Image (cartoon, rainbow, N blue to C red; front, side, top):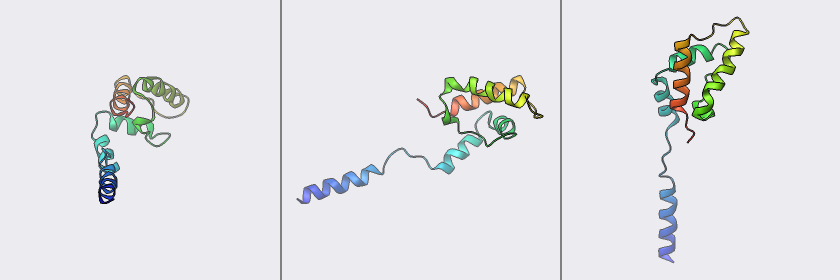
Length: 98
């Protein structure tokens, strides 16, 4: 019986040893990623900066194009070609989709 309790206790203890990342650390990493300032400037004209993990990397070019069409239909400044590439690179490289 003692072995069972030891095994259960060890299992519970080790279950907390995952590869979880502190959200504050993850957020700080994103702030220093290439393209972050462009993404913040462009996206924040209309909404909060999206989580790069919201879409798989391959989807980000079409998401950025769709959002850009909304920006062009308003009085907001659309991204330049260089900014668009930086946005896509930022979202793709920081996407958590596998």
